[in-house]
Image (tube, rainbow, N blue to C red):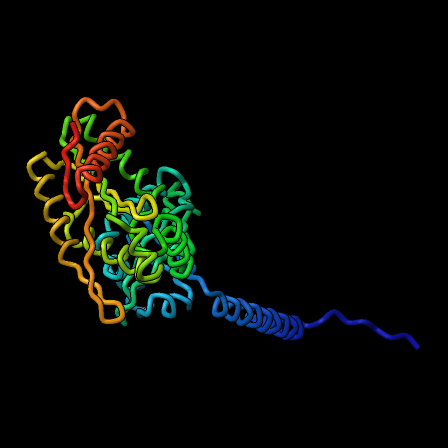
Length: 323
């Protein structure tokens, strides 16, 4: 018995095509669901921007978590991005974004944002041109933004530890002289005045021997506070030795430098300490040197140091102006 194999009818062909199409649709839906799930779990913001239209054409779900703002508003108005940037960083963020057209990619781009709830966060926002505007096609810039606030906080803490004297919270010796060198170079280059003050706590060993090192530490901490309260904004103050402190006064003429040294002297003299019902005060000896023909910072420092030791030999608790 022969079996005839008939070609599928047009209806059967259409039915098979529909079933195949439905299968493709389901697979696309499954892939889309997986892709959406992945985007939702990534703790970074993926975005795409149409440069000619100045419009955000895509932003991933993490935007609302990281920025604390509505993605719909951003997609409707690019101005939402500028509005969330910390005011001091707006110009940098805009310029670095514009640079991507020339450079093709921007890897190091960090700025601060203000979330809708008022939180200040640091953002690393890398971007590159994925499609150039050729042959009638728009220029598309894509990028990825990540929250690096904890990294920035750690960097700040490491910098503080590297530059700050642990006991007094003022600049440590290395950081003080690095900053002093920059101010010295600037003053020499532009012919502006500069003053260097070196001060040493009088009879500090006696304070430690009589009252203990804990009280001695308190004395150093209080003197550092006097320095912070007395000096002007932009002046440098640091602990450069055991009981030795230094200050650099940029742009400070000799007359004003002397007044600042006197004010610091009075503030230290006003300090009082009480141990076991007994009170005592503290004094310092200061050497003040104004920039003249010093060839380098070491020369200026040496003159202040010689003046300070002259104050010590002359009876302590006084200021001596360097030759």
